[in-house]
Length: 488
Ligand code: GAP
Image 1: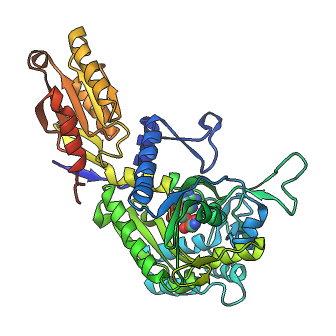
Image 2: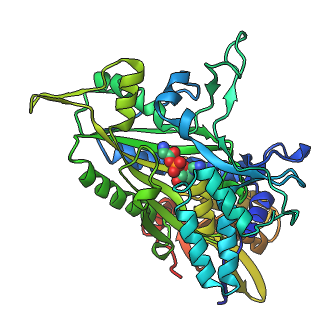
Image 3: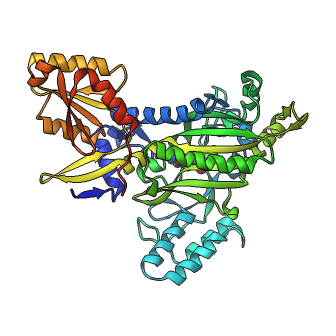
């Protein structure tokens, strides 16, 4: 069978819109840039992913507990965390089209162009200068110089009419309470990462949950970044969701825990059915580390737009807790009773974007297959993530077939997400649910009324089996348990 893998993100965008997975936000008003809504199938997939992550963190580790912190936080939090001062992207505006770009990304695109034009030496030289930008006159000045001396033009208008490069803070400011204005010194921000909600609750959790170091705190929640470049669908959004876990450890053991968590997190990707050969871990070079990190690695997936980060694993040292201790005046020390020692714990963080993870699942699952002269689009995702796990069809709309089909639906819906469908030919019903990633379809026919059997059809290989109705639960359970992704 001829199989086509995903070659462009556009196919996921179209399928998402057509099948109710993801919509542009406020679509009827022309949309809002880099903000998206999840439709009926998308929200189920998202919930299943959240659940898979939550179970992994909190059920499989009895020393990890959860919190759900508020999005609004005290303004001092973002001073302590370094975000007010340092959470910036260098941006530049095209004076003609008034469009804004990330200065470093314009240079990266130029490097790619030089490479594809066969000018490898020039590409390498420019890469070297980009890597050391900031070390000559300052970051903005160095980037400006590279854009001008390489005559990089605006991608949309083709113009060469730039403003100076400026730093642009990515946090959204807002008003808090009737008396304040967003320009106040005490402006309240929408959180740009969920992590700080964990750091400020570290003492509360320690004092109430009887955890001892090492222990972790997990959280799932919204984060907001006013991204300068917000393209590529849900890959880079202005409102998105993070699933983060901060693991508090004794200083000196941080490197060991960092290595362990990187390994564990890679294994999780395989457990949710992502093809191994599409995954890799990439260390951040020392000069590219975030202000808080001693070591960091990205877990990357090979998207149609290239290898890109889905999750970061970071050794944040005692940076955050020490800064909160300094800014709040509250002690963040841990007292190790066995050793009689006090210290501010180090933190190993795992941080994954839920929306980006969902996009990865869609990309990894997408196939186009030639079947009997037609193209079938199918999402071969792990059955435990599938928005609809079983489709239930009466062969035709006869009351006795409908009755048995409805009974099967009500038996299975206790355990699985199921969908009853009686409209259109069986072939059409299969195709609709292939596109939704439904791993099992059950058809009730007249023979089945006699002997209480049904046909179960499997999404991945389209094979069909005859199964007695009272074994359906067992067959589906085993199908979920033993599922493996098709490689290649
Ligand atoms: N607390 C650490 C932190 O926030 P990060 O590398 O900035 O680290 C972690 O973000 C993850 O959040 C990324 O790996 C990515 O999956 C996701 N993420 C970050 N910015 C995003 C955006 N604008 N849109 C969608 N996901 C984003």
